[in-house]
Amino acid sequence: MARYKLLIEYEGARYNGWQAQKGLKTVQGAFFTALDKLFPGQDTVLYGAGRTDSGVHALGQVAHLDAQTNLPPLTLQYRLNDLLPADINVLEISKSSRNFHARHDAVYRSYVYIISKRRTAFGKNHCWWIKDPLNLESMTNLAKIFTGMHDFRSFTDQTPEEGSTLVEVKFVDIHENAEMIAIHITGSHFLWKMVRRLVGVMVEAGRGKLSEKQAESYLRGYSPEVAGFTAPPSGLYLHRVYYPGEKIVRGPEVIPVPLNF
Image (cartoon, rainbow, N blue to C red; front, side):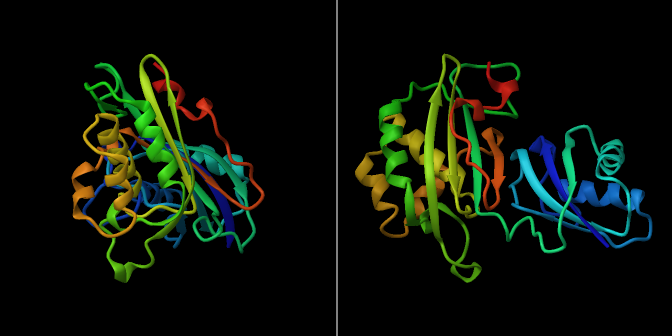
């Protein structure tokens, strides 16, 4: 049994997230269909670094694949891409050690959220168009408040039984140009819907409808109010998954090129 490390990009608009679910179209499910054709009768294992939600995209999802094969990585990449839908693409495959685990070995995850400042014919499934002018100073102040180790239970639908709601947010950067705002968030891991709610709260502050004091109170105790600020999935991209020793990327270059209007 060989283990491979896969770097994957996908447009999530047609999918109910990454994780395979019975009766639903998912990214992992599309891989299983392709793998069944490539390795008929074989039980393969594909494990992703993160479970992106329905409608969320990925620029750099990482997965590990276990399969009984001696195919060179490049050949495996070509054959998988021939069998996958056009909106899922394997960017790179490399051989890995049997001890490598895409999820458990990851030390940081990075997401980018794209907000369009104008109506666009191309961005409906790829960004959040906000008509209101946004105060970036207010949003940046919240970004500083969210940085560090905090209890983000107000920012998730995750139940206490599913584990700790403590998360280390390493940084939140906000980039702007004439057409768009990109919010780049990197942390140890993220709770279900957490990034979209962080973005939603920052947007409410940018609209002038939420004070820094109110936002900070969400970190001191649970508030159901935050759920109402959940940003749509269309603007969210899993940017990169980091492993020990890898340099963390920051700066406007993290903005997806096709969306740099």
